[in-house]
Structure formats: C-alpha cells, structure tokens
Amino acid sequence: MKSPKQSCRESISNPAQHARQLSGIDILSRLEDGFSYGSLAYQQSVFDGIPVRVATPRMLYRMKKNTVRWKDRIDAQKIKEKFGLED
Figure (spheres, rainbow, N blue to C red):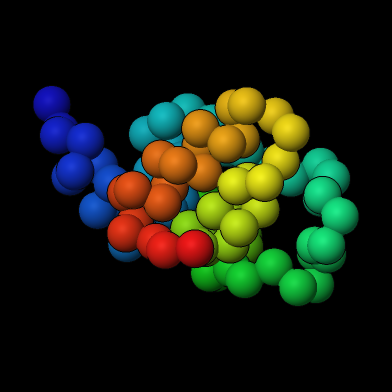
C-alpha cells in the first residue's frame, strides 16, 4: 500500500493516473465570482487517451479558500499543506 506522501507525489507528476486510482474526477460545473474558465491556470494531461486540462494545485487553492462551502475550505487547507502553498 502506498503512503499518503507517495500518492501525493504521484498526483503532482501524473494527475490523470491519480484520478484513475481514486476512481473519480471533480469536474467544474460552475465557477465562483472572480474566476472564468479562460483565466484558470492548468496543466495538460492525458486521461484514458483523451487530453484534459487539470487545474494546478495553486489555482484550486485560490478557488476554494474563500467559498461558503465548508468542504471547499477544508479542501483548500489540505491543498495548501500538501503543496506548501502560501496566501
């Protein structure tokens, strides 16, 4: 079994593989005020042979840190800690 740190390292280097291991992907259906799809920082990846755009950890943190949903704020804190991000 992989350690959480090992899984985190793999998710940074290969986000599509990490999504397959988790058996799910979080798809953005709407954006909070102040964000547009054209302004999102992303990395290009391939998921089952299909090119996809994956939001960078810093972008996800920015998007989640000030939302009203408590789950987003928890996600933001976890992202901040895992990737060593600062405000």
